[in-house]
Image (cartoon, rainbow, N blue to C red; front, side, top):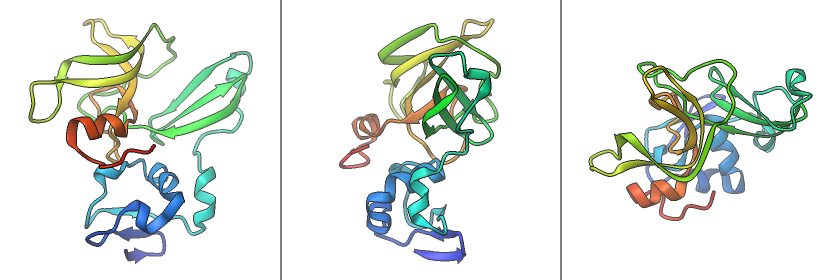
Length: 188
């Protein structure tokens, strides 16, 4: 990995998150809001100064007082591209996301989940280069706009930047393997 500064590096041919970071690769990927499908030669990522600290990285508050009375609460930070799951105001886990891409914004505000579907498929979008509806595994609907378009939290790929049509996307490497053939061995 070529370093362009003390905290960034560029992948050389043949390098992967796994070969460079071993067991910490999942945490380095989360730190960069990226998945393995989007890591290739020439791609730059941020590398923490103390790699052992990356496992505990979560750019969300450990305690969220506004959710102290809620048994379960999801906080999504569009600026940080992270989702936090809280129980009675205490952060239980945090994961990277991919939100609306600037042309199709993610709705903001307070919402309640109104539907769940383990193997949902998009009515509007297709897998690149195919006529297959885009899979939205483990989907949780949080909003329907005035035009009747639904917005979901669901599995997808994470390119490291806002890239969805307004939904909140989470890691789904098994779906990526099924649809794109990459990564060869999904283990997340």
